[in-house]
Amino acid sequence: MVLAGTERMMVVDSTGRVAWHTTYPTFGDAGGDAVPACGVFSSDGSELWAFIPVLGPYADENWVDDAERWVVRMSDWQITGRAESRYRGITDIITSPDGSRLGFAYFDGHHADGIWTAWHDNVESTPVRGGWFPLDVSPDGRHWLGGTWHDIVVGDFAGSAIRLNEDGQWDHWEFTPGACFLDPKQVLVAGRHDDEKNRHLLFRTDTLEPIGHIAYPAQFPDEQKCGFVRGHGDGTWLTMHIPGYERPEEGRLCRWATC
Image (cartoon, rainbow, N blue to C red; front, side, top):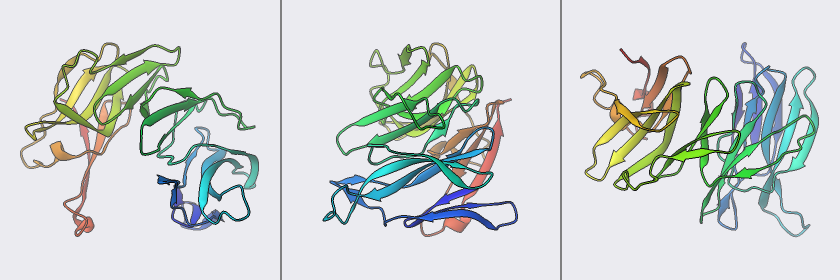
């Protein structure tokens, strides 16, 4: 497990032992843009891919200005690749099932810019800007899922993409970053209508035509409000409901399947 805090990133093994760690300057704002730290393991478990906050390039700059991209070999915890990312405010990073692509996004306070990257051992990359936060990759690795607060997009790595709100049909809906592939053919999206009705909606991957909405059991009325959804690629998904910041210990994590 990789954990990233305000001053330190660490990898903890199955026994709870800290296998690797690094420290960095306390991250904060760079010109109003957050510069957090985050990391993810490669699909074969051989590498840790991480974004590490760094100070500005000038000696008199005493604030975090950027995040470096690191590749850490897990067999001996050596850093085998290191480069400037030149992207501030990096959010979660995700990988395709075969580990050949890594997606990350940043928000600079003015616009969202989704980045899909072919990232190799030498950390060379070719950013493809789409204007959406990358949210998920389909289990078969063919499609990516992106979104903003007002739109959801499904694309393939050949370059084509379909927008959910192309015709304005969903103008009165807001979408959270909660969206995922249930399986290669279905996308689950957490949305809220102007009349404050929350819905978890199902769409076809190839056309983004609506299939219907998820009706949760009556004893779980708050699941519709969950902005957090994560798909397993096998038709099941997770929701997490937290009643409030004051009572995080009362949170509920559930795994669901359609029937």
